[in-house]
Length: 424
Image (cartoon, rainbow, N blue to C red; front, side, top):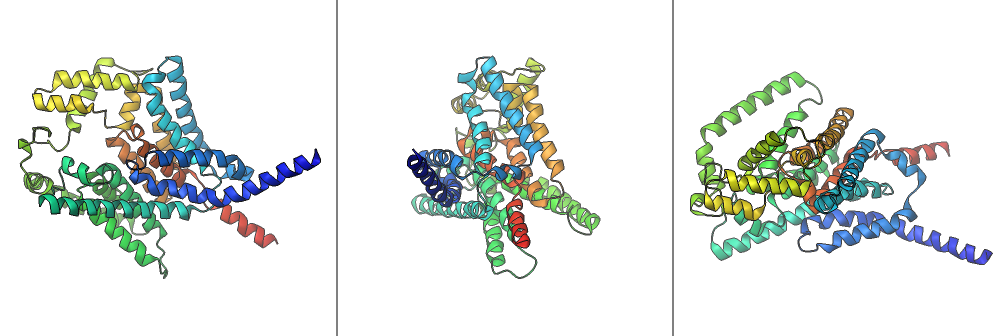
């Protein structure tokens, strides 16, 4: 009996050592392959299963002390409310897909607890962004060689060439830029030049693919930067004047930019695009329908369910859109709310909206003195304002990454090691 227990103990110790060495690399690999989700759709799920199985072997009791508890509990309360709401109202079929992705983001954060080195995850994001950009540029070259034209602002063209949706590619570039910026040091460091090159490369690519999300978010981050460091008043004044000039020039040239930069071809001849002045962006019509639904329903407590919200939008598109080709396109695509927070309100009610907003607001004010955490949180919030990221698997995983960057104390382990060496 003692021998069996000894063998089991030995086996467990062996598995712990083996899995502890593999675990961080499996975690990094998960983020490395995310942009290629369409090509290796099953691989992220396989890696998640591997991490879940290995977690009990590699987790230590002290790892849980790294969590910033209040925002974490707010997020857990939000996820719990979604689950309870779904079960009590018997909406499993209508809500399962989205609620499952919320849980994926939360579970991913918990699975990160045994990982001691954030650098592996940061490098995975940087290299995944570079790989996605190079793959996309290669596809652009192939299209240019085949057709002789590539309209960078045309969503139909970009979907054929970019490795992942323009919005998520822009988000990935923003994360890569933030990681490189935060990794640069004021004193000499041989890696500074590589991080600077990465920042320039990702910024130029975001401009090249006309990622309005990335450009707008980087401008917001540039403004936020002025609130850190010395001479804040002078910095804020300069940035305000610069933004005013940019806004004025953009307004004066908006027709030229729209017709010559966003679209090289006359978009009114393409039946797949919305035929109005804002044909390159369908959100105006979507949000108009969202406003109509919210007004008709009044204050929602239990919500319409995620499927119910989509059905309500379908009915609105059929009634509100007069152009037949545009209506057909909207009904075919079944466009969602394109705002994650509005989606939670319409689908799950005002309590769900209050909980998720409480998480973002509390986390923002708690970390407002930390530039890196603040900007990562703002990048996720900005994405949620124009995209339902919990409707996509890639969005759930990137939400988990933001939680890791914002809610985890990455210095506690290294500080503990220093303390141990000092005491010895």
